[in-house]
Length: 112
Length: 112
DNA sequence: TTGCTACATGTAGGAACGCTACGTATTGGA
DNA sequence: TCCAATACGTAGCGTTCCTACATGTAGCAA
Image (cartoon, rainbow over all chains, first blue to last red; front, side, top):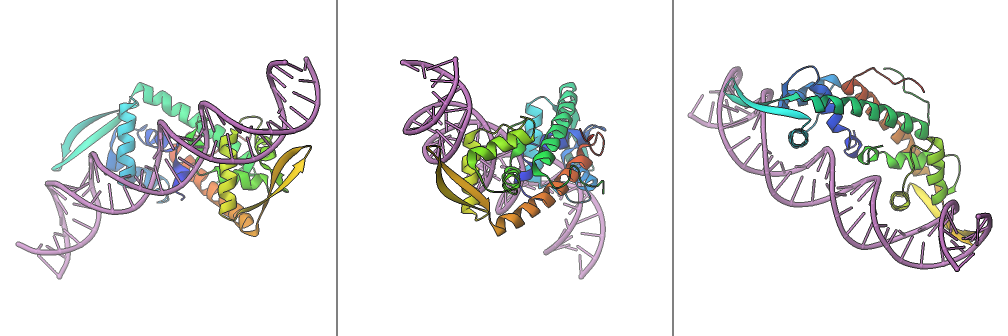
């Protein structure tokens, strides 16, 4: 996976991962890895700053806790984050349509 | 269309536009705009530097000419560029699959 | 008890990319 | 005469993600 390919699309992925319930950062990273069959194994230096950015933007809300002697920062979607996620999905659909139209080679890949 | 969304995907679009035959920069920009129903109206400050980059990378080859009193730099795909385009299509398919898997909200948008 | 791995969070610095804003020049229509 | 469309270009900026490093706990194996 090219490094730059993700640019501008990471926020939506993080928000989507938090849609099913609150998660701490490391769990979000693992969930994304699992959901994509290991194809999206983000470095922590990518995940944590992105979560901080989302929190500053008011899209997620974090709170500290301690589980098993390890401190955790658990994040949950805010109402604004939920709206932003819906927007991200719309934008992705439009972007993917534009890319497929311009890139050619078949309108849509097989659902494999 | 978000500004950052395109990052890392522009090269493939430009190469795909040149696949059907040589084009000059401005025509490439127009072709992309047409192919996407005006949704991808790239500024010239994006197109020209990108073409220069592709030429430096050896993926396209440019030559000057004058048409109607206006100087043009016409670009055509190199063999390496053709291979790169095929790779870009593969990468896009994989990236789109990963995004759709992680973003949720339906596996693939309708083919509209 | 030493060492390693997994878990869990964080920052500093850098590289890449696309955009904004500008500049230059010609053609042709209002 | 003025402006839009055509056609090319660059400088500088902001954003983003990555690499590399730092910190600390828990648990397991040697």
